[in-house]
Image (cartoon, rainbow, N blue to C red; front, side, top):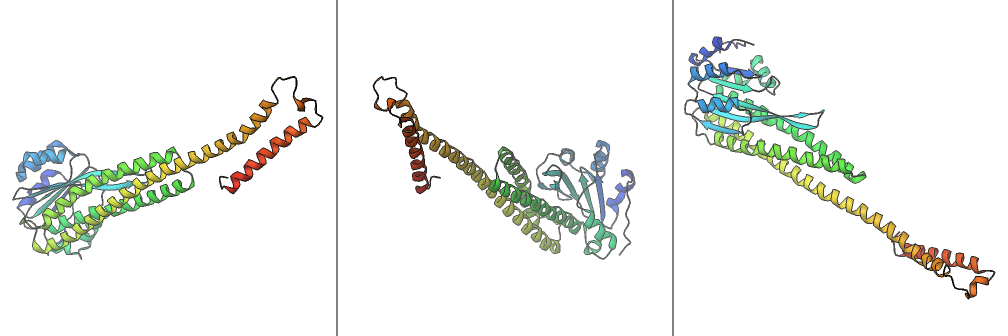
Length: 316
């Protein structure tokens, strides 16, 4: 029931003594991480050097490590870049102790603002719960933001499907391949997160109270739903590749059909003009008054007859 205190842009030395306080403390470090700050936190809280190394290395896969006195979680926060139409990622690291939660972010833009607002309002369960519920709330905010990314990817798939139906071109093929890469990247971020949430849900760590485990099950269900959606989108993009190849093949077949028809029409014409182009002295039609019109008549009848035949066969 103590009043909520919020401090912004403070020196790390002034907030490190929070580990000895009884109230819940949330320390959020955003932006480029200085080695000195990380070292001071590690020394004050006796954090394992390997954990500090993982926090400093922002190319880690989502994982969970239990060190009895504290839990270390690492996951990816995803967002959608409207301008480049691609998924952007940022690594989030969480250190959960008995009375504190420390979060490390690569940039100052995040999806934690709704959680902060709920804390400031003072009417949320966050103000009466432990750091484990706060950690759950942050995990839930990150996972829920995945749905926004999936929604934008779904819109991209719809646009590509329209392009495939109207007029597929090489740019469409490149866009499909780019989308497949984004989905592969998203899958690599979500699948390990499933293992992390599952491990937390089993309740093996005393830092997560039993009432919080129920909420973790909800996050786990959301992760499963995200995985199913990602797999569906991957199947759709694979099907789009097949549609593109079929469309290109059909277009090539149409072109070949037209060229074949033109060649077929000119075969008898070449025969007629070749026949009367022979340099023989005694050819009956050479001295005939109606020989030239007769040749044109044969040519026109041949062309008209073949076009009519092709139409009846539905080749045209």
